Image (cartoon, rainbow, N blue to C red; front, side, top):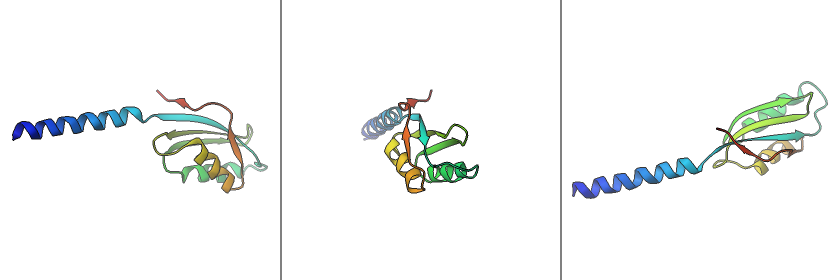
Amino acid sequence: MNTRILAVLGIGTVLLAVGTAIAAERTVTLAVDNMYCSACPYTVKQSLAKVTGVDEAAVSYEKKTAIVTYDDQKTTVAALTAATTNAGYPSHPIDAPAAVK
């Protein structure tokens, strides 16, 4: 009986480790439209922060970009661009999402 319990716990641990290994933290740079004042980046950052899975967002008024670090198991680039668009700032990726090491 104890051997079965240990086997089940071992399999469960392996499955949890595999699930964690598959998930990756990614970073994408978004080009953000309609930022016309120095307060706009605050709104863009807040819209991104509300997306589940976003770890960090750095928004530049000067460059009209947002660099977003997110968990690709919890959100997508499409959800990020939808969040900024819904806040009045349409965006699109200007680079492919990269895995963060």
